[in-house]
Length: 174
Image (cartoon, rainbow, N blue to C red; front, side, top):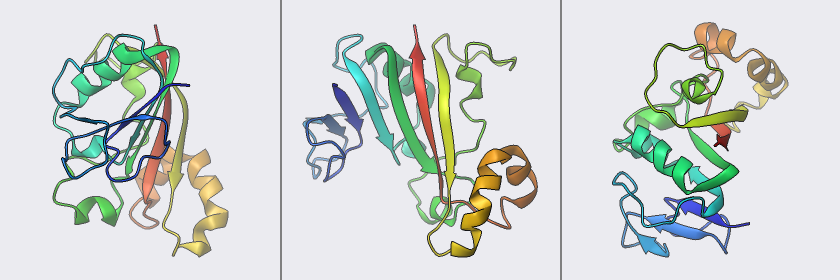
């Protein structure tokens, strides 16, 4: 399985992945700004893309989504994780440009009933998982409930029981 790791920093999650990062201080295989397209990769080159705590730093998120789609093989998956809007982690980092929410990628679904067409690329949402801070051990029995009814949680309880992050697994539809 060929993996592209965006924003790999000093330590890649998968040692055999192709790591890219904007920082010259990173251990990336390729130093590049993923906000700029096209990326120097062939179409349908990767089986998987890891984008862990990177997406919230970007300016051109739609362009990045389109490039992810282009370089993924049909059925390839991208894992995107980032801070939820209720997370103090989001608000503590001056380089964060926008927070995540449960429905932020709904418009990419092939059968989306959202009237906003920002891009022609499509991804199927395979999973999305809300995680909480380890200090919130009292919430662990409730995390099942929050993940089962995320819209209810975001609307009424998000700032009462703040999350740490949301992780999405998206599958390229081609």
